[in-house]
Length: 94
Image 1: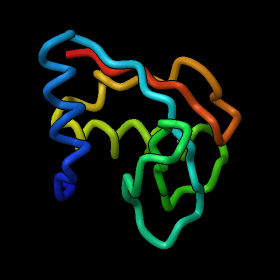
Image 2 (image 1 turned 90 degrees about the horizontal axis):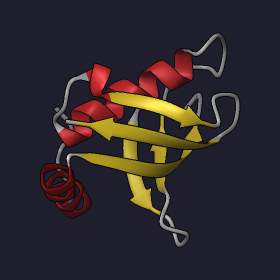
Image 3 (image 1 turned 180 degrees about the horizontal axis):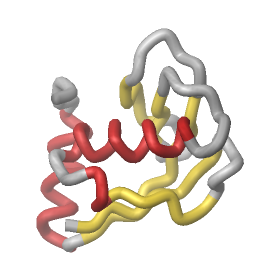
């Protein structure tokens, strides 16, 4: 499991309270290692993944990483906007 940044705890509490989250993220593909690295000035989470942006591999890794980060099953995380873009919107359900 990912080490929990204070932001992860805040997002988990919001997810438990509201039952779902919609997050804007910026994906950095082909990174050295996978991590949810920071919250950017525009509020989006920067997510680094090791996968190449080919055939949905990076999207799959993003979903798995965010699921681990928030402590939910991978099936609870879905890319809803920006499948072929580095800027994405994801929905997380409980």
